[in-house]
Length: 458
Ligand SMILES: *[C@@H]1O[C@H](CO)[C@@H](O)[C@H](O)[C@H]1NC(C)=O
Ligand SMILES: *[C@@H]1O[C@H](CO)[C@@H](O)[C@H](O)[C@H]1NC(C)=O
Ligand SMILES: *[C@@H]1O[C@H](CO)[C@@H](O)[C@H](O)[C@H]1NC(C)=O
Image 1 (tube, rainbow, N blue to C red):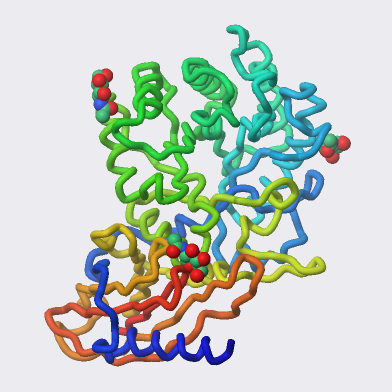
Image 2 (image 1 turned 180 degrees about the horizontal axis):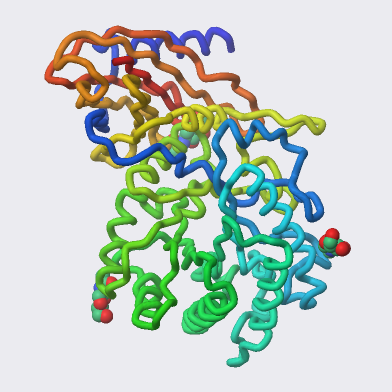
């Protein structure tokens, strides 16, 4: 075990260092331009759905605060899902079925606000459509009758107001409506619900942000669900959400690099305005490791999308562990390998700079510049291949057009979500020669889940 770790360490050192002849053939190149700022660092991907333990109607205090503040946690999305009977939602017993879910929502809201985060409220979970409620359950607008959902929304609004929950609040109209487990009715009924519910929330809470449609399937030009949703919200006054939203889960859904421009095409076709975007669930369960998290972070940051990690816990597990960034043993919480990656990301202060993904769309980078120090994180999408990072604009951190520069490297290991891998591995400082204002760094990951960080001191 020890020896294997040592070998990995040495081979990584060699390939992140000057001895490039030892490296394998590169699968591609991602780029960073240190001289091209794209906005202040905002930690856009440091949020997650659920992940906070419920504590009555108070904020959670069981997970030590520093686990959230160290990663600059800034957004949560919840609505009391998967609580056992009798707390199964409005569709199961009206107010009696709903109030336990509302209490959980309030607790999670207060925990989120404790860290200054925004809270995206899941209407469908309070209703009780939290995955497999079944065809027999009541859905909004059944038999053309909207009175039940209107009573529900008005109760929810009154509880939100009574508990002072408006600050930092976003209402998410419905989750993953194209999946039958969340919406076991026709698409037409969903589109009608979307317009109906938005109209009512706009009347009741005129200053509260709305997000939607939070589809499970990311946008593509040939998806009728997307085209018809865009069509349904266009030309009807104030129905267009303040924040567009969808999920980006698994390779089969491609990646934000392609889905965001395709959404822009679909929306422009119906003259919808350019508005903020929430990728309000990202990463399939096997994509939750340091390499893949960098992959998603890089694209969220490049496209200015706020992004929240998906949460693959179920039942009580959903309401804990900060969406699998921490774990507990006998009531004591520990960070896992991914948490350290988010902690490093949180330390990437200053200005974000321009980057590009590799041409095979499987390797990506995020970079910031603060004074004369550049920080870069790099990771693949579940492939273990050698890639290059081309860092241009070195004059952006005060370096001459050619010369030599010291680069400090770190490696982020992963041993599953129940293992504390400790601080990132210090790979030491390597001196690089460079010319034409451009430096090439080669990464050869020892696994398909490993991420790297590089610090260039100007
Ligand atoms: C919800 O919270 C209120 C206020 O603390 C409490 O009276 C009520 O019993 C709670 N209900 C459930 C089901 O948690
Ligand atoms: C653009 O709108 C037209 C007319 O509604 C429609 O037929 C076409 O499929 C739309 N294209 C896209 C990419 O959404
Ligand atoms: C990634 O690596 C893990 C551990 O070696 C392996 O189980 C998994 O199959 C790999 N995934 C892919 C897509 O190659």
